Length: 120
Image 1 (cartoon, one colour):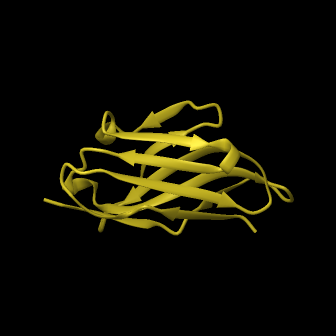
Image 2 (cartoon, rainbow, N blue to C red):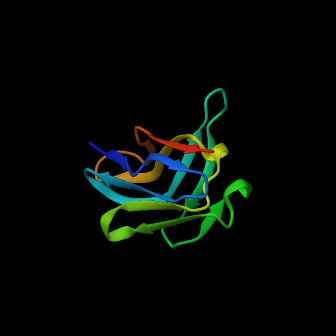
């Protein structure tokens, strides 16, 4: 069974930094794009950043220059370094992975979410 487990969320003051991690485990053949989404109260889930297996990245305009996504393919892990955090970054952050399991069809997996709260 494939599982994505996030860590690294918490409470931080505006201007501070946090680093999120997400590790994929289970019988995985390969992982294509990995990404981070977030959902604030009363808002839709939105893409924050994504990274392909080859290292190509994409970011939401609201986080460009402040957040950096990276991954360690050997560890099936994706990271999100968040700097210069703002109160509007407060949300539940979800990890996602487009992966191929050892058995079965390709599918999109989601983590359980980790809360990030930025105080002003």
